[in-house]
Length: 117
Image 1 (tube, one colour):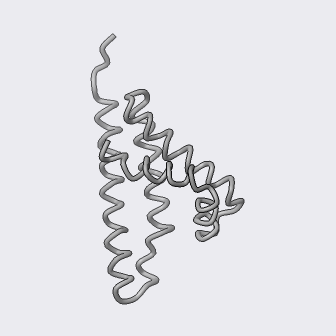
Image 2 (cartoon, one colour; image 1 turned 30 degrees about the vertical axis):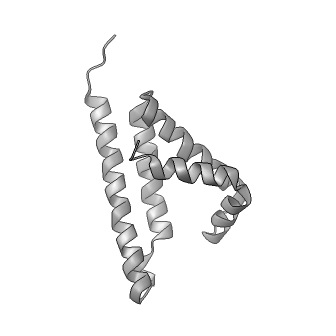
């Protein structure tokens, strides 16, 4: 649950503030912004649900790992910033790689667990 918390929160915030979600997509240059907003909402909530319910947990974890890796390069471009902003973006950049690692571990462990019929 804790690993998925940011994605559940993010998906719900975007769902209930769709204009804000569209604005976020526009901020990152994604077009068509409304379709990207819908996709991100579905991905964040759907992949989290897969992980939390245990149905195709490995798939949900891989999807969030890939999404987080891509979003990290898009949103935390610390190499383009200076001063305190650079420090904050760099911190966030590497924290997100920790999440990617956590999701990859979940996927790997889920595929390794013996299935009980």
